[in-house]
Length: 113
Image 1: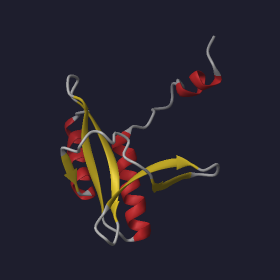
Image 2: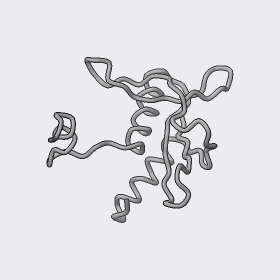
Image 3: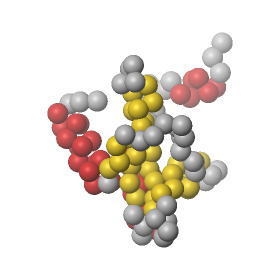
Image 4: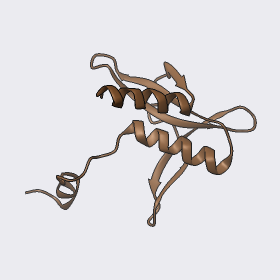
């Protein structure tokens, strides 16, 4: 028997979000509202399957980079400081938001994943 959650997550006219658009949104929302530098880190979470994870970070005044994540607060999605989703894996790439936008746009334009 399917649960309500299974039914909700398997609607034919929906696509689940994933870390790429979420990290881009988080960096854009936080950076544009707070007027602070943001970046996207990329971590290899599965070397055998070549799977990466992206997460936004913002820079504090002391130069420290703080991870961001998005949450539902009961009224809307919000971005807030959080923790690294994969704290034991060092990023192998760090990109500015505009670089990530360009990379993703080029991939979509070419029909890539």
